[in-house]
Image 1 (tube, rainbow, N blue to C red):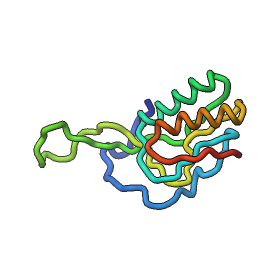
Image 2: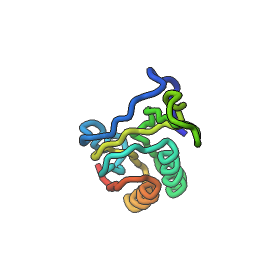
Image 3: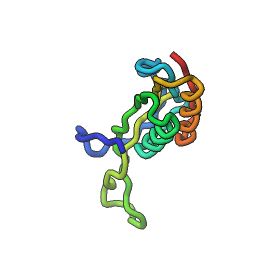
Image 4: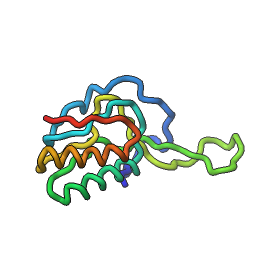
Length: 134
């Protein structure tokens, strides 16, 4: 799964994504893309599940680009621990996604195959998405 090799601060504060994205909103590398329509945090596990679903469907026929990276650490305290004692340990990493962001790109396959692969990937994600062409 994706996770940063090194971070400036081990524990971040929570901040929900509020506005629409201005960067990463166009299909840049491939011919087809999957665009986020809602704000959310996408975990490294969800990104990996989506990537596997797409790769299995296209049967190594094309190329896939992942345009998001989970660099925000999310902390969690162990179960049944009382309040106090500080902030919990880093549990997992998430990518902060705002509406308009291109999540995945694909090239080297037909539009029908790309559309179905992106549909399978979208089922693994917790947000509404849209298939876009270059």
